Image 1 (tube, one colour):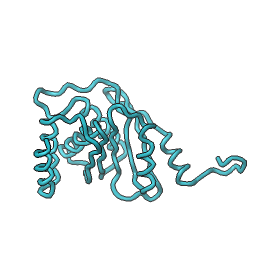
Image 2: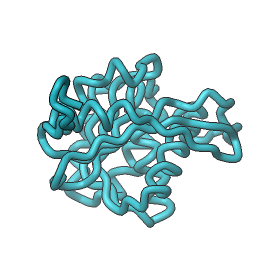
Image 3: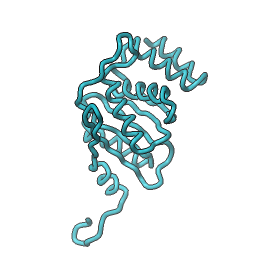
Image 4: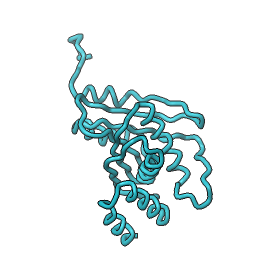
Length: 186
């Protein structure tokens, strides 16, 4: 409401603020997680799935969401679940916490019927987006376009190489040079 006029503010800034403040809680068999969604008018490209670092709260990520909105990108994220991570078999390439978080993201993506996504992982969210990419490849239902890792951490040497190898297989030959560069860096 625009003060003193009785009219509603429909500016892009007001739309962003309204959408960013509307978080939804979802129930799964393991517990709950909370999502945030920001969608501008006439969004461009794939939906962006944004995974924060482990200690980030949604309010701290508001500048990232605002920039995605300004660029007319549809963006989703979750506040990581607090329920216990699943047990993973010995030798699994998956970090239990990244697996828990990835499964919550995938649940949210499926609930909204999203078919094509780009993944952005910030800090330890990088392990989450790599896990999302591998899990979605295994399922084959949702297409992953771009994968962006911002200041990746918490990946560990063996798991990151195994996850990256899986992603290279998913993306095809054009990504094989990136895997070679990653191996040399580690």
